[in-house]
Length: 97
Image (cartoon, rainbow, N blue to C red; front, side, top):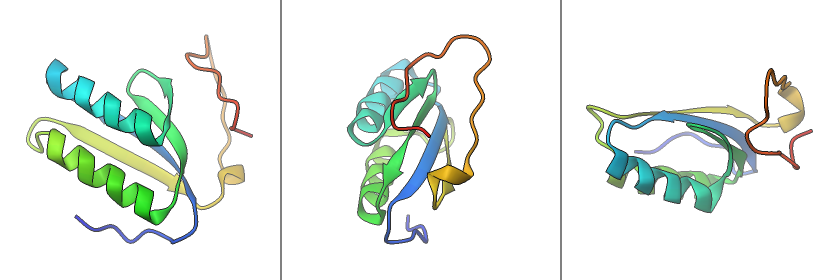
């Protein structure tokens, strides 16, 4: 699956819903290679085009497209995304400005 992704680094937020505990553990392992865990079912990080396509390719090999869902939100510049936390912060995000 090919996505039109800029060659420069892009900031991504990934949210997911994986129906199987076995697949979920595999998905988490893949996401941790590329992005920073921020909360249950959510990762964020800057990826270049090659990294993004590698991440997606690895995830496609794991998920069941009829049961699982992964959504990527993106912004070419991280400064265009505001962030407000209500309650506890699950993982301190050092790189987020």
